[in-house]
Length: 202
Image 1 (spheres, rainbow, N blue to C red):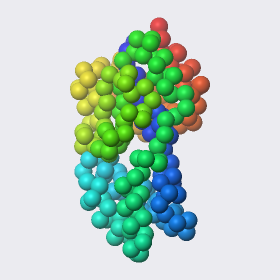
Image 2 (image 1 turned 30 degrees about the vertical axis):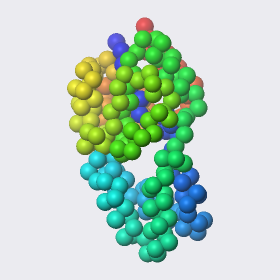
Image 3 (image 1 turned 180 degrees about the vertical axis):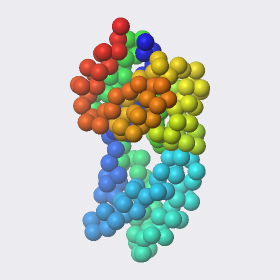
């Protein structure tokens, strides 16, 4: 019997678009290059893993950009991305409130850098969560088995009593390999998600 609902954050509870901050700080002709150099770079994964600081990441990011103006723009994007790139996903506050009312415990499991703690109040229903796990604090990321085991141990959860919602199938597969069933929310269809969650109620 499922007792716990575990939510991913990005593109589940919040929407995320890295181009938003680039539109604010980068001229049009450089946006794609800087967006790729910063947000699609290996360093971004290492920030999520907690193995690199933002300052260390930016040294590498700037090295791959030839112009000082590009380096400055990339730094501005790093400094302010959480103010522009993320916003609450419509309808998800209602989803969180509903599962809480139904008696489920709810948790957040996110691949995210340490900066998440600075904007977590933006996450719909975060005040209702029983626990929050950030990959950078655990030094491992989804879909690595370690992060799921850390979740179960930290919050004293039985894997088979948990149900995981993530927008990446590999993360769902990783959870299932550790005993936690789940649903891939890649289509972002909130009504379909509600139907899936209804099936978990006795």
